[in-house]
Length: 356
Ligand SMILES: O=C(O)C(=O)C[C@]1(C(=O)O)C=C[C@@H](O)C=C1
Image (cartoon, rainbow, N blue to C red; front, side, top):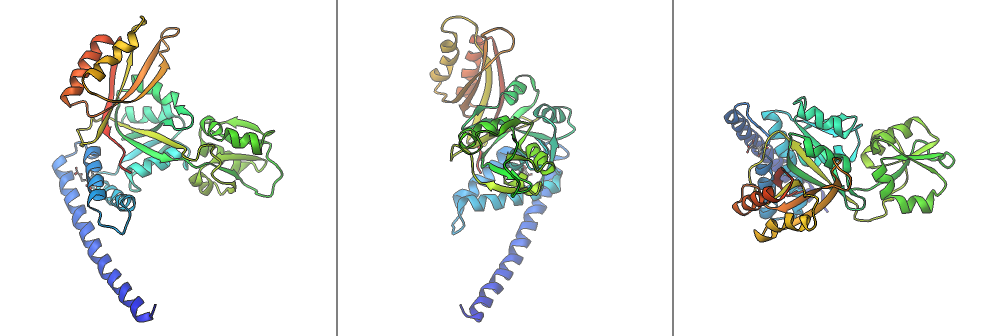
């Protein structure tokens, strides 16, 4: 390419960047006005954000892929929202965990992510209104449900207002790549399970130690060159560790779903899910009767997960996801019928299906 041609394109980019900047600031001024109209009320509107991102994907003319265009607008909205009020997001720390990555994917980089020592503490910090929202892992495609998050949802006054889906890649990390074979490998129990086959094959005699989070494992490995950690990219960078083996998860599509919870209920976005928890009476056919109102009202169930109820031996609660928003008449009718048949029903929240 000739120098002249290169300069022409770079001049065009400079002029377009100036226009984009002007337009983004015009957009930000509208967001500030909206903030004034909200007058100190709830600033974050997940349904509106989902609609904005879906529309960007729909109208994107390319050549940027829809995902890239949506990610750019995710960041623009994040910056606009922070002019109205910066959000604080609780996550299971320390910094560098997958939950933090999920929080940033959902709220963008302008949100202030705050590490908590446990999922319980993350919930408590939002319940007490010290922080605005909590992001917590709820299920993994390889290892299934995250029991602690499900248990906390039964009693929390918080509503689910969003979901985040994140591809999870695990790496074997060490402080000193030339050190002899590690004595121990640290990680979160879920990550150790997600890399079980790889560990059996490659480090069969190394003790596996489960710790509170992957980023905590990375932090420990940064302080002790005799051990290894299994954690993600962000934790490796944060704690200055070297990747000895990459993408060691047994399932190539290893994905975790996270929930976002806060105090507000969200209004319909046009493509929503509703999560419920309910318990059946301990009688023959009870579960079948319990779920019948969903089918009768044409409500499709996308997930069913059971957990011990903790109130009686062999009694269970059922976590159910259904398509649609709780304000839709067919779902309201189904919910009324569920209340008649179930010993306990709690609507955990209706929220937009993840866009990114
Ligand atoms: O539409 C709003 O309510 C806004 O505050 C604007 C905006 C945006 O930047 O588009 C910002 C924050 C909200 O979460 C949703 C959207």
